[in-house]
Figure 1 (tube, rainbow over the protein chains, first blue to last red):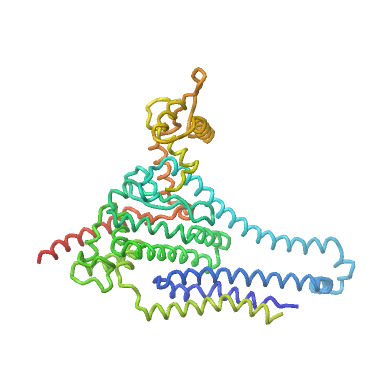
Figure 2 (figure 1 turned 60 degrees about the vertical axis):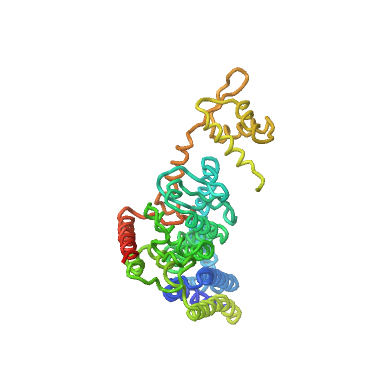
Amino acid sequence: MRPALPLFSYALAVAWCLPPSLARLTSRGVSAPLGLAAWLCAMGSVLAAAGLGIQFLFRTIGADWPSLSRALCRSVAGNACTPVVYRSALYELGVAVVALAVTAAAALALWRYGRRVQGAGRRSREHAQVARIAGRALAGTGALVLDDPRPAAYCVPGRALARTGPIVVTSGALAVLDAPQLAAVLAHERAHLAGRHHAIVTATRGLTAAFPAVPLFTRGAAEVARLTEMSADDAAARRAGRGPLAAALLAIATGTAVPTTTLCPPDTSGPPHTPLGGPHVSGVPRGLAAAGYAVPARVERMLRPPARPLLRAVVGLALATVLAGLILLPAVLAAVTG
Amino acid sequence: MRVRGFGDLEAEVMHRVWGHDGPVTVREIFEEMRKQRTIAYTTVMSTMDNLHRKGWLNRDKDGKAYRYTAVASREEYSARLMREAMAEAEDTEAVLSHFVAQMDGEQSQVLGEVLRKLREGLTEGDRP
């Protein structure tokens, strides 16, 4: 007989207690890919532990069913409980109803998840199909242009696990971007496609839909979405530079052209490695961060000097430890309690 | 250059149909396309037949040939796509990965204000 309690305790502890501390480690996006792995691994670990626990539970119940059945019956009806009663169809019916309720709850969670994931995939395919025909090809980039004055850029993932899909840019976006900024936008979207971020985000959103009350899944989905943005930003910055990326973010968000030199001193062609000096530029991050929402935070992150190697190493080590724990603990618990 | 798939052929045909003011025949589209590449008449015909089946083209019998017209203009399709892309429904976010999350008017204004000040500061700073 294998007790399910240790596995359930572990799953509950990770699902409720881990999110705040893990969020502290990953919120600044130092080693974004490792942070992403830690959140996904935590979700997988909790699901695996809970699933294994349920399996242990059912096995134990199944093995001891005759005596368990009698004990249950006695606890309710006392001495009136004879074999005739607890072997009767009515009694079995009651047990069956409870079992059905548990199964129904699980099925509901699965159905919510499936509906969410499938709906996303279908809409995405339809959108991609229409975009491929109605859009104009942007020479040399593989991107599609839609005629619309509102600036926007996005990628439309194909099948759930595919790395392909069109990148759509509006003519309004092209009007406010210069060449390096456009390259940054396209690199960001390509990083989303290459990293299969859509599949990751869709799966975590599906888990939120299935278990709307569990912090690991609700908060985790938001953190995962942020981390995919950060890692796509990092990839775009490596390719096109931090300055052009920051300027492109602002240009599309506000619908006005933002010369990269507005944000970075014109003499430094590459990414700024020191805090931006001068009275005019040091105001940017502060002014933007004060507004406290997604775009300013991303711009600020690009304009801030990259994290120091020591900090990177410490955060990386902490995340690696968390990862190892998330993989090993449930396995150990399952083996030791056997 | 990668080999153009069937979807690209559909796109090209649609773009040519949109380029005409009135209804077009398969023959007219075929003659246009042949000037730029080698293509079989039957390929154009089956592509246009597919587009009709998928709801992109309307067609009317005119003698023994069909005359095709686009169901909606390219602008209408673009507008539809943008409506979908800009929709604030939670679902859309999962489907499309936007470069920048959509901001409401107030947020955009605050950001624009900060940028404007920054630019003014920069021009002053450049000429001490």
